[in-house]
Image (cartoon, rainbow, N blue to C red; front, top):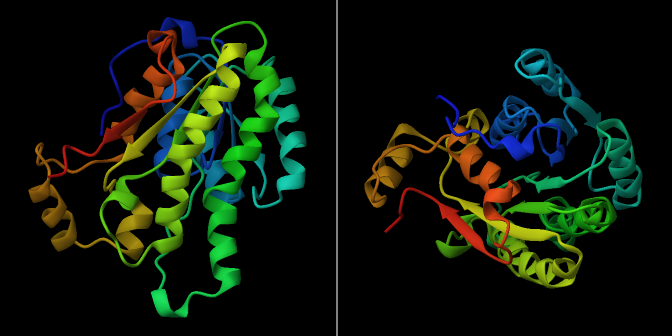
Length: 256
């Protein structure tokens, strides 16, 4: 799939930190920002996949992306990760909280440990990454946080109770962060993707039948891919959305 054709000149040389950037939507976002000329660092737990991403993107823009290996469940280590990224990039103006894991769960079998593990991946790091990045984002002008939620919590999906809770929580957190950080010039918005077909999704959950069923529910009956989220994210990170905060954008083809 081709990436967005729009250019956002203000993103050139801007420090951008992306979580979960080694695969799926995250890898597409890393590429999108690199193509805009941004200085990009991305965090992921999967070093092998990240090496492939970094190698592929090394020469597509003026700045090769920086990979930082980390497990964001280690909340105590998050401030050091953000400090490292900011130092390497020469500052930080954009944070994209993308990292997530949409595990399916059987309602009656979920334990307290399962629940805490899921929210520890999908919700908790969003706050603590934002908290650690806020001083850097507030320096100067034009700082932005883009949080990735999902339409999953709107669809009554019975096999993702913890994931849906986390994604609904991200919408509330986005609005609260916008209120807290707005006076310092930092905008906070959220993207809610629909059913995005990635290699992981196809390997674990999606079939041709389920993909076609979702297409039939969409106003635009086209399959969504990771690249479809790049343009909206670039817009929210750029000065084009300079007076937009505490908002959510649904990118799902118009699910009916």
